[in-house]
Image 1 (tube, one colour):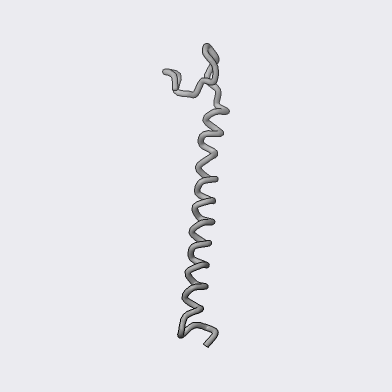
Image 2 (cartoon, helix red, strand yellow; image 1 turned 135 degrees about the horizontal axis):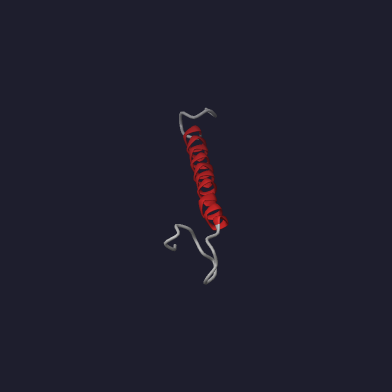
Length: 58
């Protein structure tokens, strides 16, 4: 980052807000993926608990 407070893609290029947009835009994608993984882990846990000796099938 330069003294102007933004990202510069090429030498002597003015600050470009597009870089900030894409760098900042990755956080919602990461958050969505982490939430999807948490949900999948919870679902797997429910399936394992339900298959035990005292599970739903007994």
